[in-house]
Image: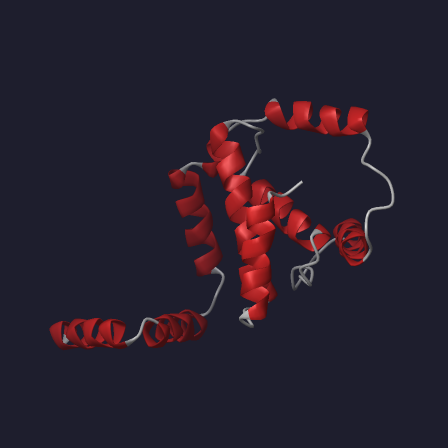
Length: 161
């Protein structure tokens, strides 16, 4: 169950018109924090990210499944998470099953949320994007940083010439 502050931050992102992936980022951040604390583990950064996305969908974030090749099993799980997010909980979760899941995750490693493994994951994800897509993100970042960001970008361009 996500912490109330995380859900509140995600709702605030939604009110500001931010994308569903940005809203889901709050849940992924919380998940990484839990793995680092040792509350539970993950085998890889991708697993920790997937758990965060699942929590986001169950909390009502309209996050679509990953584009491209996804198995029918994954798509079905995404649909179940989305459906759970749409309706209110009728019964309390099974205490025994919940405890079993927590125990299984605790047996997993905690290095999946280390800075090194997250850096490798970010590099791998960036490599799959086109140069134009990365450039567009960088330009958006520069424009959303305000006047200070624009000055800094201009200085960087001047140095590189």
